[in-house]
Amino acid sequence: MYDDRKEKFSFKSFFLTLLLVLLFIFLMLWLFPTKSYLDSKLDDSQTIYNLDRLSVLYDEIFANNVERMKDAAIGYFTNERMPQKVGESKKLTLKEMYDLHLVLKMKDKDGNPCDTEKSYVQMTKYTEEYRLKVNLSCGDQEDYIIVYLGCYSYCSNGICEKQVSTPSSLTLKEEKQKEQEEQEKEHNTQDPDNKYSCKVVDGKYYDSNGNIVSKSDYNRLCNVPSDNKHYCEVVDGKYYDSNGNIVSKSEYVQSCSTVSKKYMYEYKKETNGGTTCTAWSNWQKEPVKATDKIKVQTKTEKEIIGYTTSKVKTGTKVETITKKVTEKYIKGYTTELVVVGTKDVIVGSTTKQVTEKVAVGTVEKYYGIDSGTVVPKSTDTVKYKNVTVNRPDSCSNCETETRYTWEIWKVETVYDVVTKNVTVPVYRTINVYEKKEIPVYDYRVVEKQEKVYTPVYEEIKTPQYGDITYYRFKTCETKKGEVSIVWSYSQHDADLIGQGYKLTGNVKQV
Image (spheres, one colour):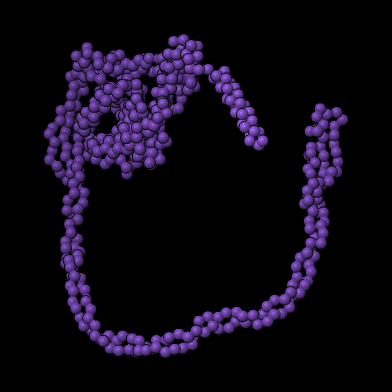
């Protein structure tokens, strides 16, 4: 009979479970539409628009990850961690940045982790500044940025990022070409004769002739546009749309996802000018001060400036000697009874009076007064006694508008002290003895051999080196030429290049 009831109950449970599963599937299909249903509801233009916005969001996430790596690298490469020699580089992979807890884990648009070996930051020392390369590889996306660091006049504390005005929307191929051009430019700037034209270098403004001028003269002579607005850029944490207005992040993405930026590039040509210099002088120790016409180079070499004399251990002399010594030895043993400790033993008992506290009742003591809309419930230790009730003549909610006043009484236990007799043991401390073999000592004279080690020293002269600075100079005369500035929409304007114009690196948005 029990087996029949069990089988009948299992069948009902199975039927109810199946019914609940079918009902749950029906509700899920009704609440959440399928992908085919969504595809049927979206036309092709709307889908393309959404994909474009999604692509912009992915690009922004990728750019934010690159920015995170850049900020972490600038914070990590302090003076002692910077490369010290020109051309020297120090590299830090994304895995090493994870291990140093410089950045949090990064993922691509599909949620997969970024490549921790292909992604890296690399700091390279140039003559007057540093170049930081930040490379990020996440899934099918890989790109990098180049940032220049140095001790510029606008740095608030030590080394900071170089302020540039060039657009960042370069392709990987263009960026690699720009990197190669920057390397060649850095190699050329090691010559102290080079001048800047219509550029802002280390916080100084250079006009078309390479002279340092004020900011207003720089803007006038170099045709810098007066429009200081930003278009489709993120500057100081603010988002600018395609019209140059400050908007929210979502409005920035919507406005700038389909805007095509245009830039003009500055070309310069200088004629009938140049600089002539004498040959470099021989190296000398006498200092030479650099001026506008005198170019100075220095070098530091290690040279001997003196000697120090010191004793250096060159060996050890070993000798074996024999000497008589008195030694102590055991002549025999004797048995003695010695105390090894003590212990307490009971030798009787005695009666002793003791007192103890006994609860005999309770008493209520006044503690204070309080008021509110609800009188608290009394407990075993606290009593609340209602005193007054203040209820309005007419109230919309009498439970919350009626106020009560009550007294607070604390219940305290009353104790009495009683005396009673108790029996306690009486102890006595006795010694514990044990038989031990005690050695009997005597003294005797014996001969022993031992080795004596004596260090052997030699005086050695050690040269002391110091840094000696050498100077060399040459005299230069500069003849100012005529400078022509033109702007073009092309970075590779064949007509201007054919006329002898060269790109200056200045770019403006139009």
